[in-house]
Length: 495
Image (cartoon, rainbow, N blue to C red; front, side, top):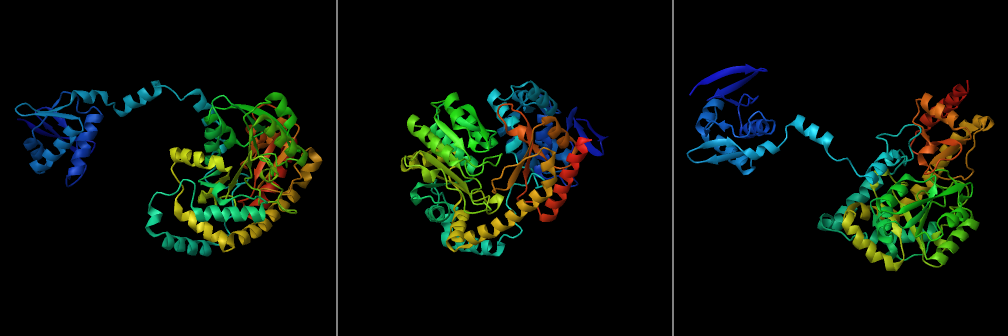
């Protein structure tokens, strides 16, 4: 046997009987080091299929380790199918290792493999659901947490953990924790005019998840669905994932054009609306159209989804009456979220549905992710029952109302330059509209602000364009500076 020591890349490489043993870059070779070296050498083709490895005795001498350690490594590689060993013949790289591609081959195989489905590519290409890693002007439509009562929340979390004990570690009810369902039902009765039993409330990790679950439960593939145009991208994605056929229904300053929806798809199975504060235009659905929508649903036995994603944040008067509250036929499914009012990582939302849908929806929920963790649910129920949630909402209404007023004051010069915005005093975003799409595009391209165009939310092309400004999570100083920068960018774009 010939043993030769070579140098390669600063590491000691050992040759035994002509076999190139992989180097181990360690002063003291341990079991995991040797395993990784041999495992990687086989996968990367350094040790080719059929090549004979040195005996465990010789390899132990080469690496300066015990023979027992080498035997353990050889045995594990054999169990994983990378080596073949037989008494009297020796140890060889398994022929099946040829199918395990090296990194370069894997990359080439990936390039030649099938791409996602057409539906998958269409949904993935719509990146407007994907939130930015940090809030900037104007992409911050999230809760402002600087005034959040963190100490109170932490105290209630600790109390919830003590109350739940080991139950916090077990499976939970897919419908949600009874205490939180009851707390939400009381809150909805007091502040949103919704009369429902706690048993009708189902807890989800997000309104997006709830919407997808409802779409799967209520729709067959190909069923027509009315969706606002422009629309909330998450709704579009949920219905497309469920295989529905989308019917874009235009929106004006009074909300969804029910008459157009009836003309385009009179027998649609479901209609999705954001009546309190249309996403993204900000329009409120008029009472006349709410009644027309309810009449249509009754006539054609259709469902209505009332997504009240930021209904608590109306800055003049009381929050608008929900579509759910006007429905005598139990056709409206109400969606709400707690993350918008609390903090974005809370991941708590809910749906209010007719009794006959509760158990089917809970069963379907188990196919998605099973259940929502009980600890944040119990903490949230305590937060609501002790009155902290209502106090926090009142405080944040004032904060967001001041931000919206400051934004409008800063944007006032644009009113004389062809820009307009909705009068509905609600929400954490504002849509600036302009009749010339090219002008809007020039501003977006030239500005350093994070500006989204209305065009990205449309399902069908339309005249004009706009800027979608999400301001809720911005500090006041950032909001003022960004508003001034936007007005200046608009002025420069005119030159």
